[in-house]
Image (tube, rainbow, N blue to C red; front, side, top):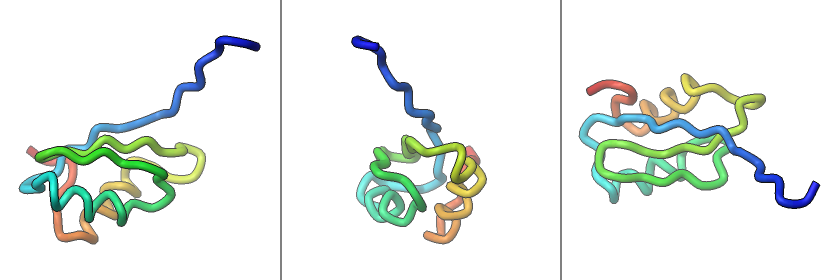
Length: 71
């Protein structure tokens, strides 16, 4: 059907102490994510929910020595 928009699920994950520059490194480490958008203290993650969960993303962030989902 013409004109239909495909919505990609995404999550905005808070990350304690992460700068924008560090977010670039974290974004690369996220599994199965084509493009994550970092900012100071958070990262926007489009992801395929059939392949991974938000918890999987939090674990990947933790693997980069940051604490995800806490304020």
